[in-house]
Image (cartoon, rainbow, N blue to C red; front, side):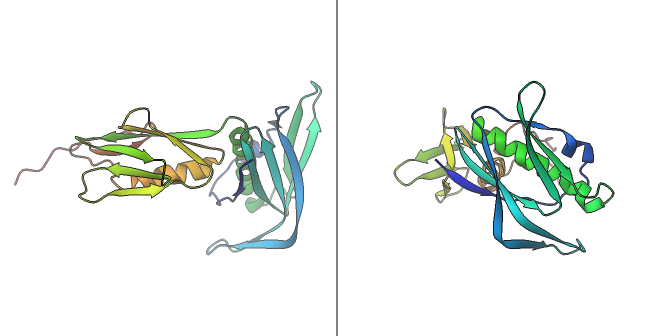
Length: 218
């Protein structure tokens, strides 16, 4: 079973009603709240406050295992509703605290994405647009080679927990349990040739589109 550690980023505005929504668990999903022996402290410039983590939630499913660090003001209840469905309910200590309210929805989203990930997985689809632009999976070296106009070989090694496939040379499918990891790997591949606005050549992620510009004639 694959195992990945999940972290999070602070967001400016996350509505608290998102955090209140219960998360439905499938019968195949197992969750466990684990206390951290050495609490973690997160400080960010401009935040003004620090976040302390005394526990994490470990989530296991058919496709793998993920963990989400939980701030000390977040409470998680694993309950059974009236329809005998197992759910996770998330609450905070002070609903009037701006930081707690913003993190409420963020933590809920991270947990929900992790549950989806270990059951169904997440994916990103890359499209290579341009004459001769293509990708190739080198299975022996666990490497993705991309040809996007450069004279030298470019590409990235496939990280643990990521599965890739290429149904055609101009398309690449990235799959994994961790939504953030899948998105990051797709973004790093895109950096080799972001879509350019004049001919539209480049690497497109998912439903990405660009507005073409007219060339300036001097």
